[in-house]
Length: 167
Image 1 (spheres, rainbow, N blue to C red):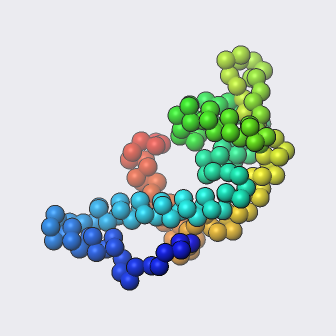
Image 2: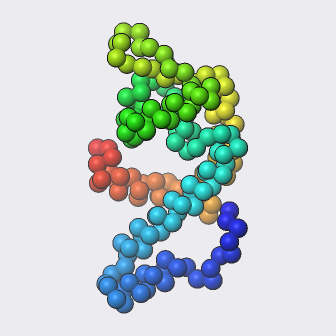
Image 3: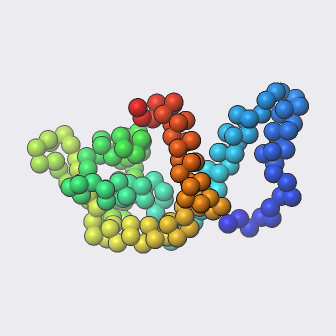
C-alpha cells in the first residue's frame, strides 16, 4: 500500500511503553493512536481505489445511500442525517456529483421547500464500478477475517453509541 519501508518495530507500542513509564497506563492512548493510524491506512486504500472512478469516499457514500433508497430519491436533509454530515457538506457533495452527471436534483412533488436527489444511470454505472474496486481491496481491511471485522465493528459501535451517534 505504501511506498515507504515498514519500521522494524511498532511505533505505537513503543510509545505505549514510554507512556507507561512516564505518564501512567497507556491502554487508552495506544488504542486511540492505533485507530487514528488505521483510519489513515483505510482512507489511503479507499481513496486509491475510488480515484480512478472520479470519486471521493464522501461522494461514494452518497451514491451508496441513494442506491439504498426505496424510491431511488432522497431529500437532501435526509441524506445529511444518514451520512451524519452538516447540510453545507451535503450540498457540496451533491453539487460535485451533479456536475459529474451522477445525480440530479428534482423538486419534491408535495413540499416546495424540499429538494430530492436521485442517481442517474451514469451514477449507477459509476457506483457499480467503484463498488467492485473497494470490495476488491476489502475497503483496505487487510489482515482481518470476517469474524475479526464483525468484532471490530461491534467494538467501534460501542464507542459511537456512547458518543451519541445513535441510540
